[in-house]
Image 1 (cartoon, rainbow, N blue to C red):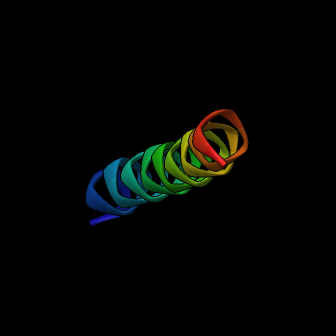
Image 2 (tube, rainbow, N blue to C red):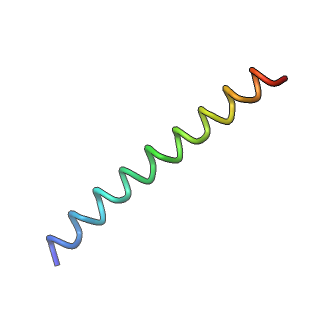
Image 3 (spheres, helix red, strand yellow):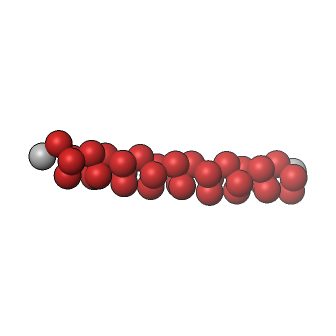
Length: 34
């Protein structure tokens, strides 16, 4: 169970990083194409 929790934490951190990357790219794209 602890192992599973660690995997979940890692996945959560990756998902958060991916989401922030997406938002940054969208903002950057809007500046370029505005």
